[in-house]
Image (cartoon, rainbow, N blue to C red; front, side, top):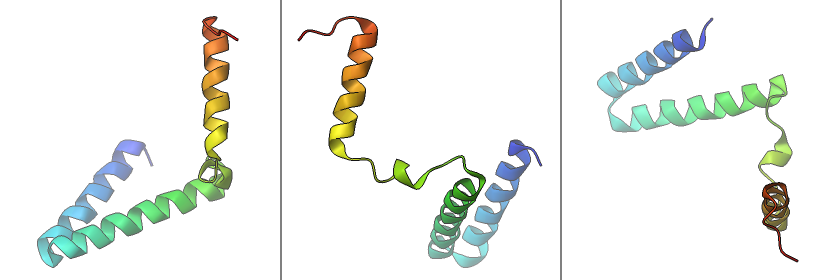
Length: 75
């Protein structure tokens, strides 16, 4: 199934939930859809649990590496 078709089905499910169940049903379907997406990505291997648990100082190392790549790094 193409990504456009998956998006269409998800949009229709959210539309039905909003129409028949109101705002809270819409929100519940949206949250459960995101949870299902994350679990699916974890199971396929496209997403790693460590992506959510990265330490703050790792971000600084990433930025330092990007500066070195641009050659404007000053020590």
